[in-house]
Image 1 (cartoon, helix red, strand yellow):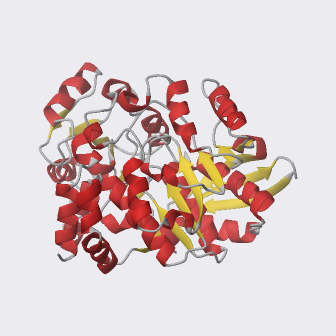
Image 2 (cartoon, helix red, strand yellow):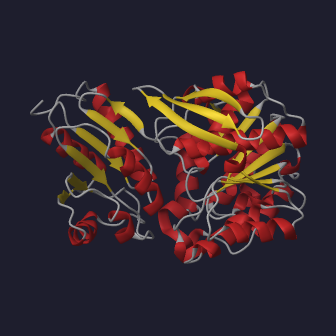
Length: 447
């Protein structure tokens, strides 16, 4: 098989959550353990940091990896899902896993794949661990895929666990209360391994405390260590004052990630670095931290977080896809000056769509669409739900069709937000890239 054929095999032959939903999930870690055993336990051959949470875990993972990389550590990063290329999931020092390594791994391990019958996510996790061990990385930042307790990544014993926050998402799988969801995320807390909690929430604080006590794990709260004050933002950066509460030291932090919600993730990263310094001797200077946070996208390739794709007319893409995530994004979107605002949005079926839609402004022009995956909520159904929430717009069969319609309708001083799903943003990035290549992007009918 070549690279394309290998990806076709992974996507089509293995159970894949993004395609078929919870039918792809296994109720235990047995498949991942079997794969890692056959591979010689690669996950035991490098230090790791494990990151879970409902929102912000991808940004937090990338920021932490950027800092470790800038500090001179050979740093691996495993995240999911990807936007445009499968290899985005598996990075070392910001460089994607080579195509030939992906091909060789699948071909070499065909016998164990046929025997274990793993899911797409299980084989991808095993591939990442194998690659990180083979390349002898100093440390790996590992993001959970879904939940924590039964997530395939949870075979590792990290030197630090991080839980960013808890909100309602995947309730059919994780539970219908914040405490129940928190209990699943708390499954990554390991015996005597410290854990950083990104946000203190009344409904979840006791859950994390009790799990940490049971595991004899020291718990740290990010907001107990750091205060962050946003100072300003321009087209390329946002700027903060970071105050260490114990030392009463003030630092100037800037980041190339433009989402206002990043202040919570930055605070979590700073707290995690404090714990790594105290417990692992990984004392990274604030000069290095400041340099890395200013260049997260350059160091790690992170995309889709309040990403400005175009200035005139303004186009923003964000992978916010649940009630809490959309609430933060729309809070910032309301501050965007524009003659008229447009929103392209689509969801997958297993979300609380009504609560998500309730976060959206009623004065925007909507383009309801669906990603090209079986899990996608059909655009026609989304229109019905959105109309009930007082949102006005039309249905479009594809994300590319929605972009074409928005481009036709927009003035030069309008603004467009693309959100609701990783898959919608991924298809939008691909469609806009094709438009750029054909020199069509920015040629609006009424500009």
